[in-house]
View (cartoon, rainbow, N blue to C red):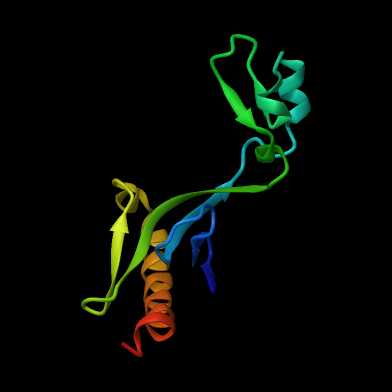
Length: 128
């Protein structure tokens, strides 16, 4: 399941192996590093960490090369966790990121959240 309205998206969390089924709500934005790998190399950055990163000449900063190939980047602003005892779905905010959304993004967030909550409940909790 993937739901996206403007730059707010909800999708099933699949980045690492975890026993718990949960969903993440993301905020997408323009990636300022897109297409700029050569600019970093021209500034002295070199391959590091097995070639997956570019590292600054001072070795105090590195950037993963995938940032150069994707026009958008995202951050998780909240997650949805199944609570089979209730049964219900718990919303967990990541720090104060929800408060940092614009008015339009907040409206999109709650629309995505409402749609996702209904679909997740139907898929995972309706038969409990």
